[in-house]
Image 1 (cartoon, one colour):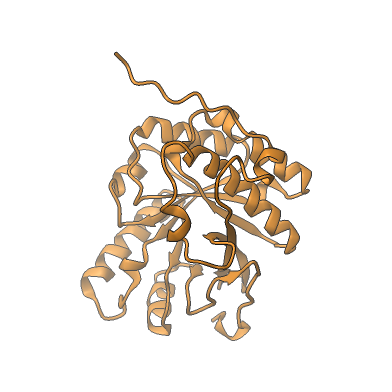
Image 2 (cartoon, one colour):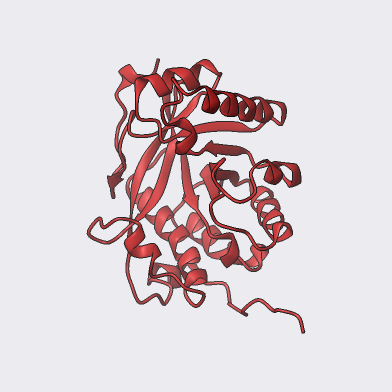
Length: 256
């Protein structure tokens, strides 16, 4: 007897705007991703929050096998809606749940509808899959990324270096971007082991023509070490904290 995926129907943009049938509401905070080489904001990551700015875990702990698909669909439309309202320029980065995306060619319908309705350019959409979430079927994940690339979405692996598969992911398929996990960044200016690991990852990404984002950067020492390795894209409290339903600015003096 073979296991079959639940027969969830793709939600439309209007259904997602109504909450996708979820029994809870949520909103978003936004954190900038900066390009210190071009000296501008590359884009913003949309981060789940409660409607009164409660932490992400208060929403994520409510997910289960019955509502994960609806949440995955709704979060995309919600992020695009808020980004448009805030006049977000540049990339909008959205986290997605690979184990909730059953048929990528149909499950992105609501995303495309929302982008069209709100006149948000699809080439400015970046979808991140966290390496921390265990993926049950790597071929399924590859199909998702292939479909995203077909629509000119940017693809990224979040929390790289902290999860289940590590470099094996890059052996099977290559995203446009990887985001170095903040645990690798912490105190890297004085940690020889972290320095060696991060240098190796950056070198591999250069060979594969994958861009690197250093996330979770909190100190000037962490920033300066990573920058010296040729990385241009950064995210973290050193530049700006997430802002609830707002787009935080970045001090121009930090673009060194």
